[in-house]
Image (cartoon, rainbow, N blue to C red; front, side):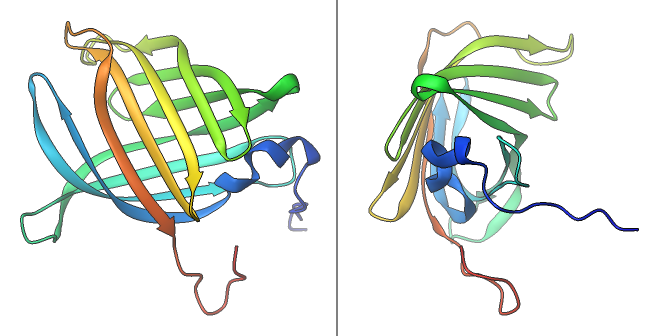
Length: 173
């Protein structure tokens, strides 16, 4: 017998409900020792009725003419709201890095800092990050500062995304 999932939103998710949906847009990344890159990004933020959000973000390098090129970055994880407007975010990257973020939520805003970074022996040096997400005029905007490659915490990447159009057979978000 197939498993039926409860897709009604858990009430604990209310402070993060603005993140739900499919998002797409563009951004830019630049950091000392790394090339500056314009990228296209798609984000999926879903829930299954339990008190956490599933997060997947994928991005691709944009060529000079705006054509999607090679994969740039990908991450997957979970947002977990806590009492008192606090939130945790756990992210894994295929580059051998797992991050645990802790922060706060306000209406249409989440601000987080790494509480822990776990790296495989083959991963690049990376020690900390600060992430800011906001729901601004119907869009998702985010910015990330990081400390890596021997550099102190500083701006790394940002993007502006819009809700993706729902497929004809799927409900709108």
